[in-house]
Amino acid sequence: MKEYPAYLNSPDEGARTYGTLSYNRRSRSWTIRGDPCVTELAKRLFPGCDGRGRGVARFTAHRRIIGDLNWLMLRYPLEIKEADRTRWEAALEDARRYAVQREKSLNAPQRAQPPSDAFSGKLMEFQQYGLAFLLNNRRTLLADEMGLGKTVQALSFIASADAYPAVVVVPPHLVRNWVSEAERFLKPDGSLRVHVIRGLTPYDLPEADVYIIHYLLLRGWKNALADGSFGCVIFDEIQELRHSGTEKYSAASLLSQTSENVIGLSGTPIYNNGGEIWNVINILDFHCLGDWESFTREWCYGYNNKIVAKPELLGEHLRREGLMLRRTKDEVLSELPPKRRLVQYIDFDDKLYARLMEPLKEKFACLRLAATPSQRALIEDDICQIHRQATGAAKAPYVAAFVSALLEGGEKVLLMAHHHAVMDIYKKELKAYRPVFVTGRETDAQKAKNVDAFMSGKTDLCVVSLRSASGLNLQRASCVVFGELDWSPAVHSQAEDRAHRIGQKDSVLCYYLVSPSGCDSEMQDALGLKVSQFVGLMGDEKPLEEDRFLSESQAREHLKRLVGKLAARYGEQDLF
Image (cartoon, rainbow, N blue to C red; front, side):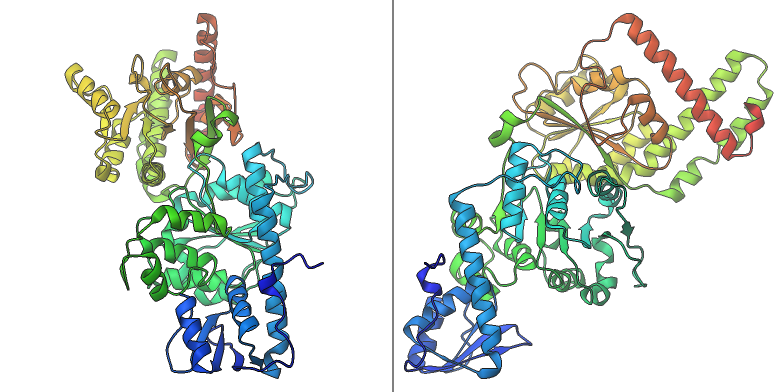
């Protein structure tokens, strides 16, 4: 008994034919040349059918559309050209497999766990369902809300499908985080090879399991990557490709053709602008929504109109066809802890960092002349502050880009920092979001006005000084982002609790944005932030007074070690 639907049965051999069917390799389409009754019906019934030319109808060679074409051939048999018969039979068989697989995944939701010898993480229940969805729908959009683990689900797919080598295309500020997450989760035996593609000029790529490239470089690697054969292509923040007609979009389209597994990740799926959602889905699965003309004609308010007439209906279609999976935090809230902490690695401006570190030479000269331990301690503090500010400023534009993505996704964000100079960069970079500030520079009246602006919804971004967070009630926030770190775990815990308070019904997500350069590494050691996800390491319980004293004492030891490392870097190791 056949498992596939009746419309995918083979047409009768020897029946009267109404024309011919042939494959066009250049346009990747199947072309009917036949009786007007057939071609006219095809154009009326199937919006994705190209209607140019009398007696000619073209269907994109897509496994969904192959089913439509076969259904038409059951009523109006066509003669398949001998040179294309094997290709047609393979295409029809692929369409049958897809139909059966899609039906099973829709009727019997599954869960999957990646093999433990290939993946080191443990998925939550909704993430297990997400992995099963990806395994059943190999060209799709994972559109979970921000903070639900799209990255880990994508990596679990690579591990489960053994989809190596994989290419991951990401925004510039997320390159380092993907390197870190891939190394953490994939191939626990330590054999994983990750290569970050650099520059616009192609070169011979070394052998690797995961290649990471950011969107700004795609145009330079357009042809080089298109010549490859990859086990999986992942487009993180795929809304970057919502506008067609660019070299970046063209390069992404060619890259998508190199693999059978193509996954888009985005917490901000777009329904209202038809042009944008069509462009995004078209990268994942070419013409699965028909061509642009037919899409705008049937789904929007007319030919070339970009506004979708019934966005809910389009969303339902995308989910039913296995083209999109989206879960919100409200839907999976029972599986989430009240407060989640994640370390996110971001990029770093090395040139700005080097320039801001130049005053250290003079400080080390002063340290050499220090006459007393108290004078020495003050200078060490100054050295540490210069280093911390240089680190914060060097990563500030990338912090702003990360926060911008959160805000675009509808999150309400508290952005924590320490130095006023760093917060001034945030103010410039995030001006479009009308941020308010609680930094210690405001009067009490200004502070109250800014808090009210955030809590009343006049703005979704409040920038708060780490040491000025005490006593604030900002439970409207859904995310707390640490653009800079403090030595004390208690300071961070207090900052988190500005959002995680009575009245907060959401699961609060706390992002710690760290760079691999600067002072972040030493401060991570002090805070216990050496893993991507961590719970209970940073003062979930109110610290006792003796614990607070111990914490401050340990912070002093970390500071001294940091100054010692800097002294060695600047050739002043004999100071310690």
